[in-house]
Length: 123
Image (cartoon, rainbow, N blue to C red; front, side, top):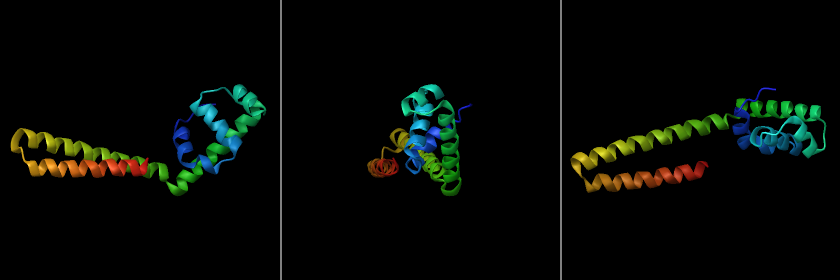
């Protein structure tokens, strides 16, 4: 069974929508890298039962992402915040080399604090 590493990411967003055995099966398989046999031993089910749990759970996660798109939006927001941070660094560097403006420095500090708050809100 080939691993789709997006599942581990989606598990963070939608894992609570799965049954305990489905969530545990995915966690053991994707995050702990256990074999189907090892997972079966841990959960007290057959290797085939583990495989079935994983397949059903993956389907639920992908369906939820298709409908809600939370993981994709989260990634886009993070990319935009990183881009803002990068551009602030450019402005700060240019200010330090050319203008040495205290007003710009203070504005940068305010923006960086707001960025930090936004990052904390989404994580």
